[in-house]
Structures are given as C-alpha cells and as structure tokens.
Image (cartoon, rainbow, N blue to C red; front, side, top):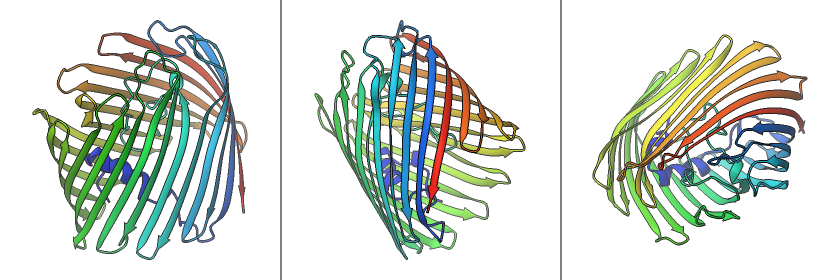
Length: 423
C-alpha cells in the first residue's frame, strides 16, 4: 500500500493521484468491451439563501441534467470519455443568477498496461457556477480526506469558474521489487463575471517522481521529488520544491510506516515527520497517520489523517479527517477537514442517508480562520431498476475571518434515470 495522499507534499500528491493510477476497474474484466451510459436527472431545490452570501435571499432552481460516459476496454488498454451539461432555471436569489445552459464538462482518459509498466493520461475541462459550487457536500463518501481547492474561501457570490487540466503519468516496474513513478500536470483556473470578488486567474505546472525500492518481501522504501510552479494574475509567481522519504512494512492485514518530508517554499523551509498504520477489518478498514510539521514561518504544528470505513448489517458508515499545513499566496495555512457518512437500508427499495462535513482554514501567521459546516439527510427510493427518486434536506453555514456568518437551509427533490448499454 502506498503512502496516503495527505502525507505527501501537495505538489506531488495531486499529480500522482490524478495521473499515475489506472482508472477504476481497469483490466479487471478479461472480456473488456464497450460500455455506454447515460444519466438523465431532474432536480428541484428551494433554499432560504440560494446563492449562499451574507443577507442572501430565498429562491429556487430547477436543473435538468444530462450526463454520459463511453468507455472501450481490453486487457491492456482503456479509453474513456465522459461529460455532461445542465439546463437551469432560477427564481429569486440575488442578481446574477441566470437561467439557461450551464456547467458543461468534458473529460478524456487513456490507460495502457505493459507487463512491467503503465501509462495514464487525463484531460478535463469544466465550468461551474460559483453560487452552486460545493466541494464539501459534493465530496465522494469513503474516498478519503476531503481536498479543498485553494480558492475555497473566496468562492462566494456569482460568476463562473472554469477549470482545465492535463495529467500524464508513467509507472515503471509496477510489479517488481523496484519501480519509478513519473507524473506531469498542467492546468489553469479562469473566472468570468465575478465582480467584487478579486478572484485571479492562475496557471500551474506540477512535476513528480517517486522511486520505490523493495528492501525485503515485506519492507519497502520510497523517495519522492516534486515541483510546483504557480503563476497567478496580479501576484508574484510562486515556486515550491520538495523531497520526501518513506519506509513501510507490510503485515498480513495492513501496513506500518514512517515518512519524512522537506519542502522549499517562498517563505522558507518546511519539515514534516509522520507515522502511519493501516489495518483491514472484518467488514471494513482503517488508516491513521499522526505527525508534526515545522512550518516555513517557524511554528510547529500537529498534523495527521484518519480514514475509517465499516459495513454493517443494515448499511454502513465512514469517517475521514485530516489536518495539514499548506502554502498559500499569503504564506501558510492550517487546514482541517472532517467528514461523516452513515447509511441505512430500510427496505430493498428504500434507504436513508446522513452526512456531516466540516472544514477550517486558519492563517498560520495572523490566526484568521474560516469555518464551514454542512449537514444533510437524504431519503432514496428505487422506483424501478433504472429510475430513482431522492428527497433531501441540507443545512450549510460559514463563519468568515471577519465574523460574518452565512447560513442556508434547502430542500431538494431529484428524479434520475440511468441507461446503460454494453457490447
């Protein structure tokens, strides 16, 4: 088991996670084939603060969304295309929330396997309405600690966020005692029609390399190098470089390891030391990490992460959290995230779900902090094998560094049909 993403310096984590690993389920089916899936959904939401801004107004929106995914797969390669678009009608809220076609997205991925190597490529383009961009509530349950975008605190009001990126990865010696992982990622963020927010366009370049050495059948050493270059409109260019070293030992049902990381950032040098443990349980698993990081600005900070998943007789639950020190345009920030998901199977065609999300970003120098909290419940009913109906409630609140509090409560109804073709 490789070191969790949250233990790696951010520049290497993002590019390796995005590009180096083949897509889910790749090469697991000997027959391969072509799979085409369409998703049709009609969602209606009413909220007392539709755009989630201070002193926001009540409103509603109706989304008719179409999504597709087309993949062709053999034992050695996989090509996948996916995308979607939404027709939105908005009433109420604040000025600037328009109706019409919105939030287009397209993604393309390609994976190729050789006996001892693997290549992956990912390309994406997406546009999101800032008023409805919700990385906390949209985080996939059980996928690990939530990774917040760097512009998370400033994303409020109206406008469009355009995200474009390309990630390439090459994995050498994937089944041998020694191997090398190489990754490259480029991308940019653009903002349209965002008056008064001060959101700057930006471009980034990420490079990553991980060397894996098997010291024994159960012991592995890893050495990683990374580089991040960030060019933001109206600000000085930012560069980061880092080195990390990890040692892990496999057990019959888990793994134990230690890791050391050094990063050279604009403010100086940052050092981190962490120990971790993973364990497979009878109906789930747990991963935990605890460490300390000395920031580039001199403070010592406690860091760590937790991922717990468990299957129960009537459903399941998952808990994840992370605390890390990250570079920002203004210096460094302590970022803490937490997620709880619980599901109950009430009947074969009826289920109930609850989730809780929390995030805190604190400037390491000034102590200014932003707190976000979200909680929701969903009742899902399977109308048939292809049709499903969900009724949901969600509460959101944010307390900013200037003590401005934003709250919103919303009800939603979502009708969805999935159509799948295989050949």
